[in-house]
Length: 90
Image (tube, rainbow, N blue to C red; front, top):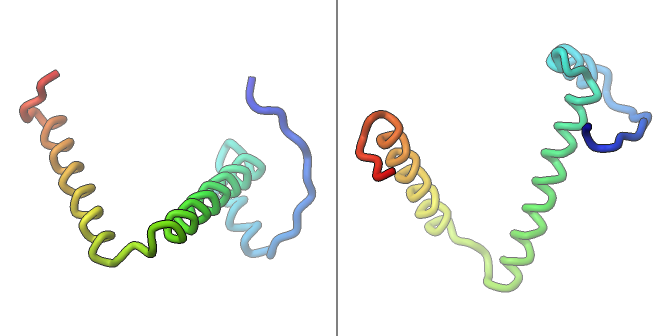
């Protein structure tokens, strides 16, 4: 059984509500909205962590961001090569 739920009444612009309804699919509007709010909470939490880290260590530079992106892309290429019949030690 899932998490306990509560019923809420919210107000939002009609066009956003209609677009969400159209995209919600079989899970329904409530699940769609709950998922969207959960993603926003995750983003807010990450932004808080970034603010704390930057307060302690200074802001991250564009060069640092690009280096991390390059590492991520390299890791994805490596992983894709392993799953497509490359050398996998496992």
